[in-house]
Image (cartoon, rainbow, N blue to C red; front, side):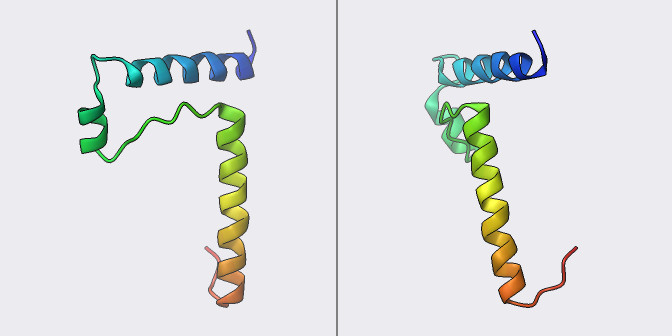
Length: 66
């Protein structure tokens, strides 16, 4: 299993864990965390879109890049 397989397997285990009764929705929500079950590729696409969105905001506001 390569890195992508490892990430997918880990993601599946994390999603399973956060959805079980042992962790519980109340505990997750009290920490501000809400499991979504999103796949690694979908999360990557979301992050890329967020970076592009905020890059435009920074450029339009003429803010310094860090």
